[in-house]
Image (cartoon, rainbow, N blue to C red; front, side, top):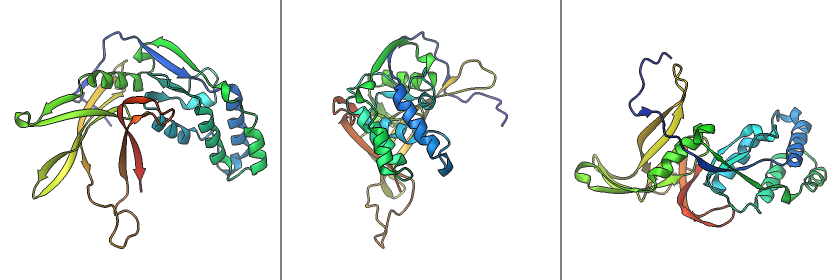
Length: 269
């Protein structure tokens, strides 16, 4: 597709920002076990370590994670997790261990799998920290930085005559930029029907062919809330697919620590 112009709202971050980024590397022993299990079952369809499923679990348990690196489970010099805040990770090895069991239990004998997992040491996992520019990991760090700046003043007046007062909260993502959503939903009249909506602000980076640096795009959208029971008349399943539920909490799922209120997304159907 030939792009002849830059969309309105595209801009470049020129401020030189330094921020403390916390990282977790995958311990070598855990890398080797995951790689060996994957190689054993390559004939069953696993060509690479199925890390995407684990990354989705990690993103829901710890909202301060801004990025996960798929290559980290194959390469020793790449961090797996980038975060703006450290969490207590005593439970992390149990989570990863359970993930390995669930991923490979269907195709590896139980006694063989348990013997392999028993060789792993929980105290291998640890945090490291480094002062970095968000530009070093731009596609998640810069949107996250912008979202956190906006959340310093999360309540705004919106609409004609500023009749809507909206308060925004973080929606947890690790691969789609940074998203903020107003809550509680605002009731509005659409035609003859009442509906409830939230305003969504999204920050993301996108490369442009003729530019060396990626551009920041911000987008506004509306999220409609379903307020009626999601049951078909025959009582079987949901009436439509692709529904997303938003679970809000002030506790991190990984360690139970108090955090600013944020949303975790759960796909339904």
